[in-house]
Length: 416
Image (cartoon, rainbow, N blue to C red; front, top):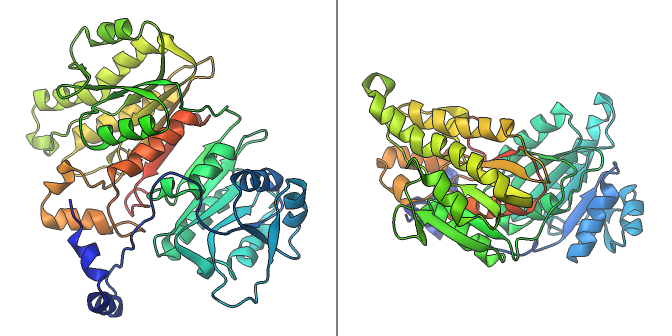
C-alpha cells in the first residue's frame, strides 16, 4: 500500500513544514542486491580487524582508515588499499558505511574508544548508510549500538555482530553493509563458526508462497540461484493444506530425494481478545502457525541435505506481544522455541526472522490510525516491504548462522 505521508513530506514545502514542527521525515531506503555503494571507513584494532579488512578488499570497496589508527596495519596485511581519513576534513567528506572492530576493548575504561571513533564520523554517514560494530559479547556494546541506531537518522542503520573465536564474519558483514539489510537496524547478530553456502543449485520449499512475504521470499531465493517449490492452499506449484493429517507424509514423499532449504512462512491471524476467543479460534490458528511447522520439520529434517537450512518467519508480536493477539503471539513465539530447541547435525542450521510492520494486504486493511502508528514507531519512521523480509531470509539460508532471531522491523520501538 502506498505510504502517502512519506510521499508528502518529501515534497519541498511540506517537508520544510514537517521538519519545523518535528514530524517524522522518512527517507527513501536504498534496496536491492549488490554490495555497499560508497566509501567505507574501517576503525578499531581487535581480533577481527584483519578479517573485516579482507572482506572489504574482496568486495572491492573504496575504503579508508584514520592515519594513526592501528587498524591500518591490519588493512595492509589484508591487502586493503585504504585511503587516509582526517577527522578535521571538511564536512562533505562522507561515508556510506562505518565498520568498527570493538573486540579489542578489554575493559570498561576502554569503552571510550567508541566515542573517539564515532564522535567525528557519525554525522558523516550518508543517507541509507550502514554502521556495523563487531564485538565479542559485551552487553555495553548492545546498549551503545541500539542507542546509536535511534540517533543516526536519514535511513541509516546500526547493527552489532557478536562474534565468537573462530567465527567467519564474511557473510554477515556483507549483508549488514549492503542495501539488502535496509530494514534491519538495532539488531544483535550472533556469529559463530558455521560455514556459509551459496544458494545457487539448492532446492528450497517455501510455505505460504502465493502472495505477500512468501512470494517475495520465493522470488529472492530464485534470484540468488535456488530452485524454489512454492506451497500454498491455492495459486501455487504445490497446493496443500499444511494442517492436513497427511501433509508431513505428502511432503516427505515429494522431497524423498533431498531438500536444502525449508522456509516456514505460512501463517494466519484470527485476532480477538482472549476473553472473547473460543477454543476453536485459538486452536485453528495454532494448527497453521505452529503445530504444522513442527510436524513438517520433524518429517523433513531427516531429508535435509548436509548444510541444510531452516528459516522460520516469526513476528515482532512474538517478542513484544500485542493486544488481541494472544493466539498469534503464542504461535509465533512457539516458532522461536523450535529455533532454540531443535536438535540438528550435519551442518544443518535453524534461524528465524521476526518482521515488524510490513506493507502487505493485511496491514493495508488496518484502521488508518493503527496503520500510521505501525509505520512511524520505529527508527526508520516507515513500514518495511516484503522484500526486506525476503532478503533477510535469503541471507540466513546461505549463512552459517545458528539459532538467531533477527528482527526486520526498522528498530521498532516495541520490544526492541
